[in-house]
Length: 205
Image 1: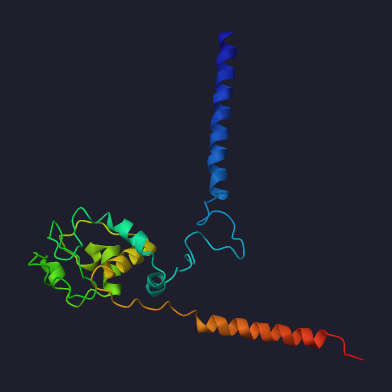
Image 2: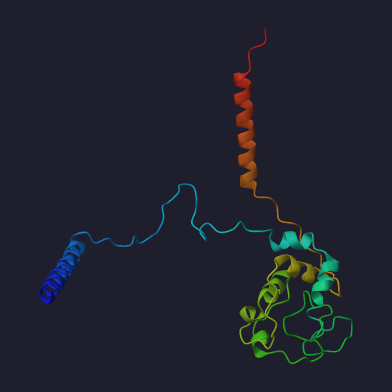
């Protein structure tokens, strides 16, 4: 009985070794690698992140249609550090009355501006304010301003327009014109369609 069991166990072990060896050999001949890019390409569909989102309205267009009441609400985020009334005292940040159009980091009752902001030069134009409000640290690396910035372009435009109404009152820019090329292409297409329809129409009798 013991000899039969040993013989059967030996044959089972031998069969296992043969099977393992066969698997190793076959893997050498039929090796399958993962493709570099999974899935299948579908024509007309861009990969996520390619092409990008369509650009929104420019700063001029947003300023031309700015909502002053909304801008005043956005200023509530700034009120902890800034005053905006005429003759108002400086706080953690400078008083912002009549700031739009003024020289960057100048005046304001002797407020101690950072060297980073002083080195910028120029004036607080609409564009400069938009850049500053987007990211103070990118506009003037090393600035003492701790505010991270406003990511919404409409919020920035509304705030700039409202600040402009607080003592500066510079004329707001006109909205950007629609792209002429696109308009010309649409007109040409319309003319082509009209010509095609006229050619297909039956002659009057």
